[in-house]
Amino acid sequence: MKLLRVGTAGAERPALLDADGVLRDLSGVVTDIDGALLADDDALARVRAAAESGELPALDGTGLRIGPPVGRIGKVVCIGLNYHDHAAETGAETPAEPVVFFKAADTVVGPDDTVLIPRKSVKTDWEVELAVVIGRTARYLESHEEALAHVAGYAVAHDVSEREFQIERGGTWDKGKSCETFNPLGPWLVTADEVPDPQNLGLKLWVNGELKQDGSTADQIFSVAEVVRYVSHFMTLYPGDIINTGTPAGVALGQPEPKPFLRAGDVVELEVEGLGRQRQSLKDA
Image 1: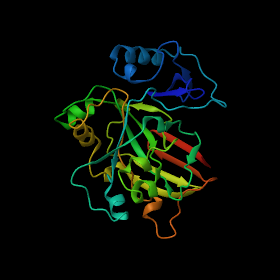
Image 2 (image 1 turned 45 degrees about the horizontal axis):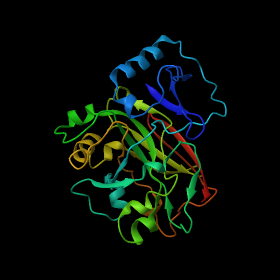
Image 3 (image 1 turned 90 degrees about the vertical axis):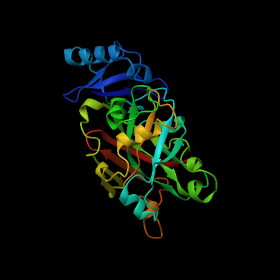
Image 4 (image 1 turned 180 degrees about the vertical axis):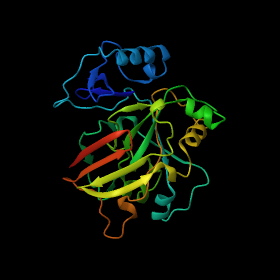
């Protein structure tokens, strides 16, 4: 299934994109798409039955905002330097273990919402990523099979980053990652049954129409299953939590000087194979 949330920010309602590409209203079946729904097999079964019945009301998508596909996100866990080619372009050594950091949950916005360049920023960068959405409480998972069984689905994420804040200002990466609007998510949550192999997905990103990133999750250093398993040994993952699994080569940080960091007026478009497409215009905060 392709689950999404539509409407004004803070007042989104649940919806579904059916097999024919028709937007359907789910608000008569469930109250929201969030961790509580993703952890409830009976509720998900009702959604599937409603989708298959063909009786869900159609929604007119004209002018309708698409919000983040998951509401009330508890935490956004991120994995850094998780593609061989991206580690190489930044001059970093291949990590022996996953590099884990966080983004504030309130950085998550809709896939086409405006992205704000922070005040005094001169190094705002782009990163297309595969996001994993957790569907079952995960702690101390032992196997890759067990890890994937705890995944509700996948989505497109844009891990916007301010490199000066992240790298040159001391401390941890988080302050270059948690500026407002720095995690567009969606358009859809695609349930795990529709993504048989998360290690075989293409990722692309364009800036002002120019292709900047063109990679595949096959190049990940640590697979989706290994990331979920690994992280569960350091923190409990709850339904509705998000894991951003890293970005392929092609970010501004890895380009020759002068590096083409983002500026107000730029337009970024990105997609992950089978998971939809995003488009953001950038403005000064």
